[in-house]
Amino acid sequence: MNEVQGFCVTDNFPYAIVTNSNHSYAGRIFTIFHELAHILRHQSGMCLWDKATERQKEEWECNSFAGKFLAPTALIEKTESLDEIKQYSFKLNISREVYLRRMKEEGKISDMRFYSLLDQIKATYKTDKKKGGGFVTPEVQSRASRGETFFNLILDAMYRNQISYTEASSALNLNIPTLLREV
Image (cartoon, rainbow, N blue to C red; front, side):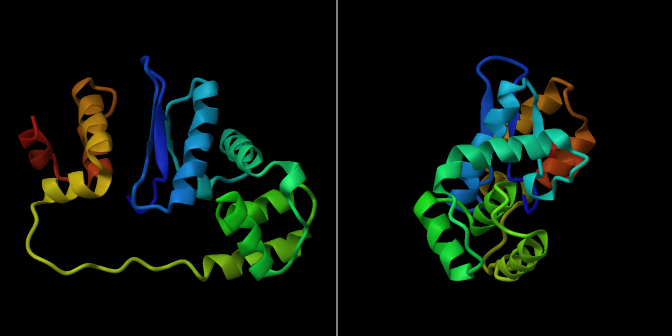
């Protein structure tokens, strides 16, 4: 849940896109279009779009598709000001990071300045804070934090032998005996 922005399933119709409700609305919107690019390519799977490397050409292309869809070239203004990047990204309902990446794609910012601003933007991200409260069973916590749809899709994939018990356990952060009780 701390790494996966979303995923899509193209194995059977209707296709599905699932986004992580722990992420911002702008992040989820980006993820929808990123995953739509995967659907158009008939590719299922979980994406860590912000961790895509240049060797992962498909991830870069899906990021580019989403970025260009949400922030077309004509709307990208050249700037090196974090305040202006924030204003432009807010108008487009995208993250500052996506706006910055679109400027880089359009050649409107140098690599050196891009990485400097990217580091400054990433330094502003909130760190995870543990919330207090009473005891909640692991399966209830997993369902609540991941959403019913995601939880059930993982269980269904496990039951259909599309993913292993270990992969399901990892995706849901539950041990295997707890998964088996969910039958």
